Each structure stands twice: as C-alpha cells, then as structure tokens.
Length: 222
Ligand SMILES: [Zn+2]
Picture 1 (spheres, protein in one colour):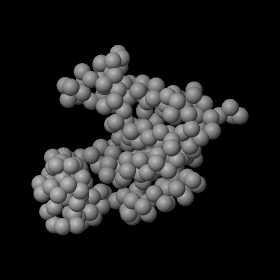
Picture 2 (cartoon, helix red, strand yellow):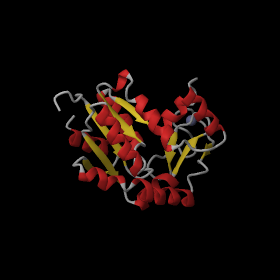
Picture 3 (tube, protein in one colour):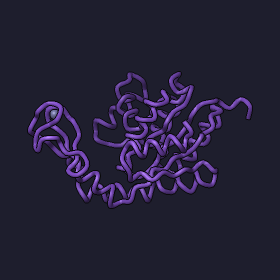
Picture 4 (cartoon, protein in one colour):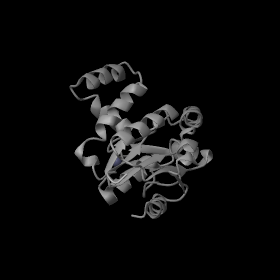
C-alpha cells in the first residue's frame, strides 16, 4: 500500500437537509480540497460538448434523471482532474449501495484510500423544520428562515432592501417526507456498508453551522 495517494478524501452523507452541502463548502474553504457535489457536477457536465454531456443535456431537458451509469462515469472522470490530487469531498455520492460498491472499485483502481465517510445525523423532525421554514429574497436570492435566520427588519431583505420573498415549491411537507423515505430506502444501506470497512464516522448535525463544522474539523483532525 506504499503508493496510496496522500491527501484528504472524504464522503459526506446524511439525509436531505442535514447540512452536508454547506459543511462540504466550509471544508473546501478551510482545506482547499475539491468539493464534488453530484448535483452541481450534473449541471456542469450537461454544458460540455462531449458524448456524455450531450446525453445528459437531452435527459435533463426532458425532465428525466441521470442513470447510475452516467453518474458513475461522471464521478470517475471528475476525480482524475488535477484539483482532486490533494483530496476531495464527495457530496451526494454514493447515493445507493450499488454506487458505493462501484466507488470502492474506482478508488482501488486509482489508488485512493478514503479517510472516512462522515454521516451528519439530524432527526427527521428537525430537517422538516429547517426545510419548511426557509425562504429567499426574490430580488437578490439571499436565504432566510422563519425561525433561524430572520431579516433584521421584518419583511425587508438585509442585503438589497427587497420586500418580496418566495419559497421553493418542493419545500412542502409531502415532498420532504418522500425525500426522507427515499433516503432511508436507497442511501441508508450504504451506512452499514462503510461501517463494516471501518470508515464510518458520525457527527451530530443539530447545532449551528459553526458548531457542526468545528466538530467535523476535530473528527478529520484538520
Ligand atoms: Zn435581497
């Protein structure tokens, strides 16, 4: 194993709304390693004039989802890019047990050893409260929350003075419940898979963004 690549290679996992995207961005800021968000990658790849890019664009334009094969191919090529040499944070991948098994093979082939898989744990009712309470300024896009991040002056955006706000249509109880059920069915089986390999670390994700990122830094020893 002497020629295993040195760096910080981690997977962030957890239910939708657990804060993994936010925490991945903070870790990227702190360490300079690449943040590989599957959602963002899909949008970027769909803009590329490559066979995969064109295929993806056609699918997304029809409102369909990318297949497992496409996502795997995308992740596989993305982790070979130079900015991933010192490490990466996978966010949104693997989303299923078959994806986790494929990832294991890809990493072995590239001689990359994961430092850990970090599960951010947040109870469902808190996730519901976080998602249902969020809204944003229609003029500048600044994000707010009914309970956790109110504008300084009621009804006025802190940043642009805008007075019109909107909520995302899919931020409703039924949709969030379905996403949580999907997480339990599809993604949760990856947790025991990583635990068996001794890679799983868990962090309590219920505190403030700063408190959670501090705990993550301790776990990763950075
Ligand atoms: Zn605004």
